[in-house]
Image (cartoon, rainbow, N blue to C red):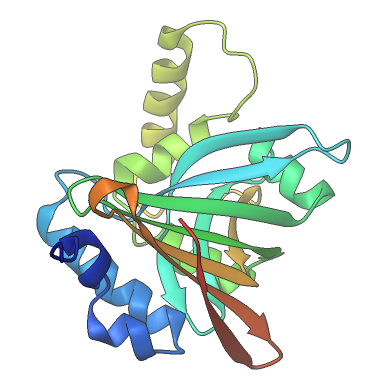
Amino acid sequence: MAAATPALTKRLFEPALEQSVDPFALFRHWLDAATETEPNDPNAMALATSTPEGHPNVRMVLMKRLDERGFSFYTNGQSQKGEELTANPYASACFHWKTQRRQVRIQGPVLQLPAADADQYFHSRSRGSQIAAVASYQSHPLLSREALEVAAEALAHQFPGEIPRPPQWLGFLIQPQRIEFWQDGRDRLHDRMLFTRDGDAWVRTRLYP
């Protein structure tokens, strides 16, 4: 009798993932692992939004906080993604950690965070990043690179002290209804585990790869 194929007998998820019903804890575990091995921005996620007509757009953003509410990020509310989230407040996001051969996908409605949250994070950024946020009319036509640099320099002189957060610079929160963990497997026998929100609880379902 032939020996069993290793790919069919070995579990690719760690035991904690086999049993856990807390996707946030599992996400933190994977993010911590990625932080040790990813060369740049392990908190980067591909954020997909869409127009009211259903035309999709995707771009990379940085997830800045994960708590019991969901995944938070910040952006210019007058940018393309900001306008789309206002008109159609639902989004998907994907974290891909190449060094770990893992990805996590999330889906859910999007809420605008309170102004106090946006203020707190805005003033935690470097002075240069704050100036750039004020100087940029994100996603709108720009005459030249020089025009942007001149505007940034003028703002630096205008605000020698604290830089006020522009009202259009906002925080958004994805409240996940679905969180899917994917782990690369030998011979493409990948592992996929889907968590679906059911009220205040989560339902765990293993998926075919």
